[in-house]
Length: 330
Ligand code: SF4
Image (cartoon, rainbow, N blue to C red; front, side):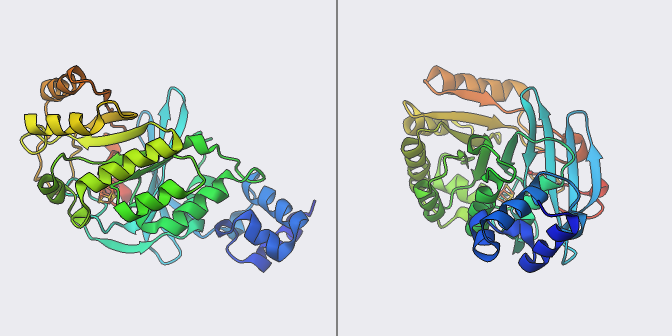
């Protein structure tokens, strides 16, 4: 095993070491040194000199911590840690800003600045103080619009000489660009999938998720169900219930037509306020009524509890701004 200095020499040959898979490092350093380097990077915390993202600020709520990371080009992203009964979940960002610009979300307010590298995605996990047992790609950005970096980061996180993160504990949450969903179906990685559907008609979906306007809603649903069948995985359908917009009886009928008898869980979400202020939050009784109707017609439904509203760390609130105490931030 090399000493610390020796490990830094290996790093200097590789450059930004968190962005490389084991196979890539092995092709440069050979098997022995690549194994040494991976364990140096992922199994101890003394690699302060080699990172390219820095924690600049942190906000804490009862069960949620929000980290603001600064990148080498002075851009900011956010990562959220949520404490659950089953352990700690990290909600990770994949882009600076977001091109999709959902109407309920602060992250896409100014469009896309740039994609994160695989290294920047991986480092969000490496430098957290908590031990993480679930990773959800549900932070700032649309993960499947940064496809190659996302898949590479997942391979790096799973490497058994590195973090050895279980594939089962990794979830990708996406608005479902059809081409990329079909590509994901063919990968040999059995990750969990969440489709952020939020509508049962094309027109409503184009209003709520303008960045998906070129994607046929039926094709999107088919691609998600096909992923579920190929990988034998229950797919979650995230549905932000917006009163008067997507909770009509016709919406219920369409959801039942698509998802009855499928391996699917519908997760209903309430709107978390952002600065846009154009949407109304559904009241408790109405969302429970909506849930009951879907269940009566044979669907499996859950109302998802949002964490971190007080620190603007809940779904739709991540903005990636400095100072985060004043930010509205997924
Ligand atoms: S909800 Fe997701 S896809 Fe939509 S704008 Fe926000 S980050 Fe982008």
